[in-house]
Length: 343
Image 1 (spheres, rainbow, N blue to C red):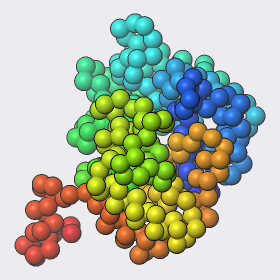
Image 2 (image 1 turned 180 degrees about the vertical axis):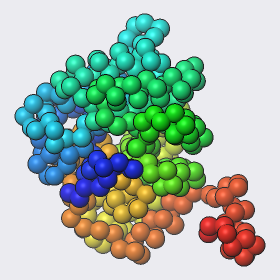
Image 3 (image 1 turned 180 degrees about the horizontal axis):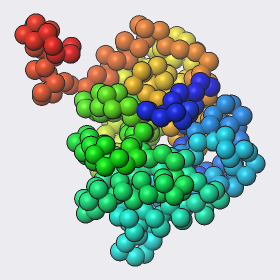
């Protein structure tokens, strides 16, 4: 597995990252501890060094399981990422990105993970109550104290990311080096603003949900709404709700994937993962696997690559509308109205 620098840092991470959101989750879609620990070992043995969790995954069980699993491996060889922002306790201050909550959240995560330092600490979502200066100063203090090494961001709007980077630069605080966002053949919205922002600012894009909650695994067909699984049980308005997947364009994407999968004798999941892996804007892809079989299949993406023609077919099928002002900028560039505009 190839290693790549994490944004504008010297930290090297594997091109695939093991996601652990459902490790320890008590439901039909969860992964029990024994299986999860086996999968963590298999991922590391395959050359992966990047593992992702969060304090709210399975109520903290995910962090605990990851910590126990890493006792069997060299902890200093693993880049361990976790997150904070959401409700992690009964009190009114057990959420958000205040100094109070972040300090307590880091200490709790360190205990569950059984480690003395977190390699990459993400803020999980914007906090509209806490001043961004307070959040970034608290994170910088935690870096200085040796509790965390690098910081990252997830689910912020583009202007919020840019504002945070500006505050960090102005005050000499630690800077975001990684960004975790949904990005897949079904959801390419980040291309409107974020990919260029991250490339410009030296922030690594680490996509989550590369298979769109399992939709891109090839097991769904038009008009056949599932009755079980994540997409079937997702609540209205959730990112993985069936209504978000059951669109004409998404079925065109599935058709394009089917042709490639059948011609190459590979799985739909590998097609979707390779589209991201061969994307120059992507640093590492978070695998949301539930079983050892899914992990083995996902790792198979490393053994082959899409051709330029196959990449193009997927790009065309999944393309998002330009929208304004991107449309007018591209049209101006094409017609030579301003040769300083990017195409």
